[in-house]
Image 1 (cartoon, rainbow, N blue to C red):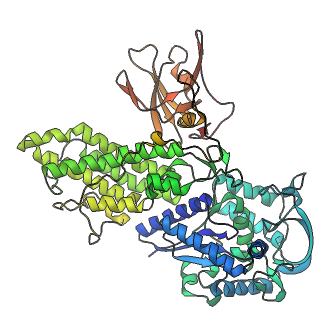
Image 2 (cartoon, rainbow, N blue to C red; image 1 turned 120 degrees about the vertical axis):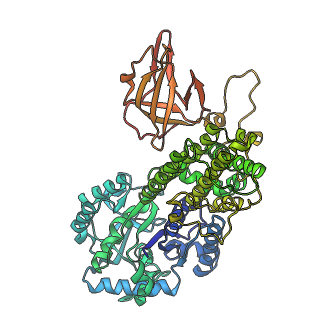
Image 3 (cartoon, helix red, strand yellow; image 1 turned 45 degrees about the horizontal axis):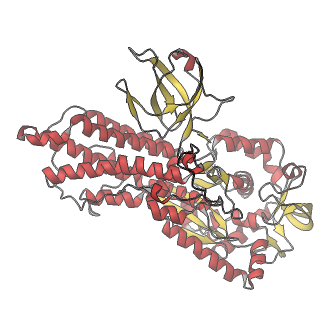
Amino acid sequence: MSTFYITTPIYYTNAEPHAGHAYTTIAADVLARYHRLKGDDVFFLTGVDEHGENIQKIADQKNISPQAYCDQIASTFTTLWERLNVSYDIFLRTTSELHKSGVRKLLNTLYKTGDIYKGKYEGYYCRPCERFFTEKEQGTNRICPIHNLPLEWVEEDNYFFALSKYQDPLIKHIHENPEFIQPESRRNEMLNVLESGLEDVSISRSSVSWGIPLPFDTEHISYVWIEALSNYVTALDYAQDGEKFRKFWPADVHLMAKDIARFHALIWPAMLMAVKLPVPKKVVAHGFLTKDGEALSKTLGIFIDMDTDIGTYGLDAFRYYLLREFSFGNDGDYRPSRLDARYNADLANDLGNLLNRTLGLVSKNFGGIPEPTTAGEFDAEIQQMAREMVEKVDALMDQLVFDMALETIWEFVRRINRYIQQTQVWALAKSEETKGRMGTILYNSMEALRVVAVLISPFMPNTANRIRQQLGLDESFNDQGLDTVAEWGGLPSGLVLGKPEPIFPRKDTKKSKRTSKGRPAQAEQPADDNLISFDQFQELDLRVAEVIAAEKVPNADRLLKLQVDLGSEKRQVVAGIAAHYAPEDLIGKQIILVANLQPAKIRGIESQGMLLAAEGGKELAVATFERRMPSGAQVR
């Protein structure tokens, strides 16, 4: 059996968890669940980082011990992970003896290599970050680039790790292992840091008391970042060379936000190289979340209201939106209007409607799941599509391309909806001669739903279980592994259906319009005013799309049929611009597409969106960009 070790960073207990923590942890949970689905032996680590100067200061302000304060904050993380249905195997706390003993062993081993030495540190320091900034990182104003606060000059006797010694080994490892740092933009960023030169790093503090003393000099406390990075091995009982350490190390994926990539991609691997331990297989640093185009800020009241959105749409819809809407390596703009659009289009219309209409037809005409006896048109196509979907999703999950993996599944969901329309299965109940064909179509549709339930279970575990229950499956049926969807026909005939109920009832949130946090509610506009509100504008989903094919529509002088690439999917658009553009002139252009426009039939051709263009008199120009942008990027 293969093993899979996935980690989140251990989150700092200076504050309660927020949506950024949730984003990382849900992504890690999806990977852990997917690898369990594949039959791997999975170990999923998350936890909290409880030491350091900031924690001591907050505890003093609250007039409680640092441990008592950490106990309070740690429980807010475990409570949130429970609510978000996070299936971690260990929640590590750095105040645990498991962690402390492992840190002492690792530091002792590192000290014996000769790569630790004592010296005097003089430099500019950010107390909230608890780190020194090099001259290159400070900028001209000596402002912390993360907290936007003035840096303090600090002088202190410290122990140092000879990080500079590992500059060339790190460059060599990154070049020889292109998958080591992801995405590629982060890999290039780390290579730039390396090529500009590494400096040795301080690994201790003599002015801090709340932490783990260095085993070779108890007058010094282990620098919180060095100690925190050690958690990835201490959680495996590294101190005792435990069975878990021998089984799961090196980690398959370290997952984190991009602001801490340097610690994980440079300092941590160098420490491991120094003590002759294998480095992690992948370090994946995802982008930041913003809200309605603005940086999250507690001060300004701009935050992602997880409680409200989960209460409105349900946990699985929230999980789906986070990983479907954004390209994981890039920054993502969280917009409640897009969550609403995704919910109603993808979940209620596509998946929910497919389940409801199929169950309804089976209940009305067969009672239980019919036997597939009469093959016909489109059957082989959807069975082949299912097999190809499983392989494609597996490859995309290996690359952590969550949005494309979900889009691949939804392409199949939409195809099954079209299959029901194409076969007009509801009409086949009129004659006993066509009843066998009707049963086969409905069986195929329900088998497709079973396959979909398996594939979406890492993303939406509760929804997957509800689909299985309505199909009449219970826990005694071993149909939930990835191997069970490799071949078509795993759904047993004759099963009595479970109780049908809508899994994603449609939401009409326009009746109770919500205002954005940090932005005052807008005054009611007069009835004859043609101004729109910011919230109305936010309902438009404008995306960068690249034209990859174009042709004239027969017998239509003004129309062109375009195929456009949105990064996560390809669409067909019909545009009335043939009088101004030849088809070949558009190929390769990046246009602005209204991506959430309801599909329409134009001259019998489905158009899945609308491009933007400026028109003045007899002139028309398609809106494009002055430089290349990623396909699918939001326009706002």
